[in-house]
Image 1 (tube, helix red, strand yellow):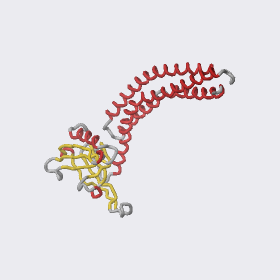
Image 2 (spheres, one colour):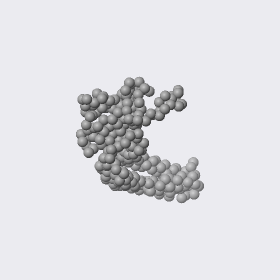
Image 3 (cartoon, helix red, strand yellow):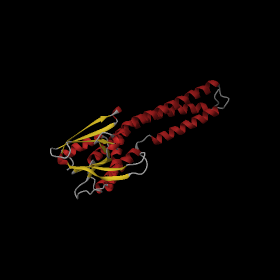
Image 4 (cartoon, helix red, strand yellow):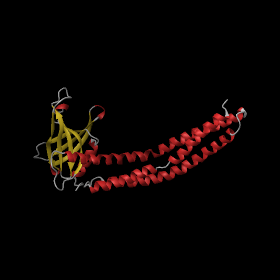
Length: 286
């Protein structure tokens, strides 16, 4: 038989968990992060990066509205849940205030009330977290974009070539120019999209012994084309399970290449490249 002292200890633990849950079931942390994203956007703009701003700011604004709506819904729902749990804890507390020589029936009733309150608290925590999932998924998309922009700055600053006075980097990420299709024989580097052109810069060590030692650093432009020389762009997923993000550029007549095939190897996948390049070709980045 469970003793009254053990039940009291169990009850205190659940009450502490409930108090902690009441303090934590608020999306205030998310609101704080969203405010920081807005501040970061302003900083990027001050550094001369003017792309994706409306997308980020619009997503942040929508998410703030979603958070407030979800907060009100969760507060109403959780307040009811917490009140029900508190009633059961008070009932259990009444029984556990009895002495250790209380009847088995009373202690059993108290144990059942305590277990039921603990189960409902677990369910409330689970439902609360599940209720925030859509918000967190949206935040992940914003967070990814916010993380990419400083990387674009870094690749711009490390580039082996100069940018024009009015030229701004829109995207820059790891890629392989698929010349032969033989993997190691094809150059790896950074694909740049600016508001004026596309550039592929080789940036890798070649000639390493056993693929590990020595080698020579190759860092320079392999090709560049003004945007008006690019006729179109397409993409597809190739390889086992579609793990190769392929991007194809169709060139205008008279260009040195009819088509350029690239494999995206960074955080920006081929569909994202495709979307932004199409926007660039249609004058959406001017």
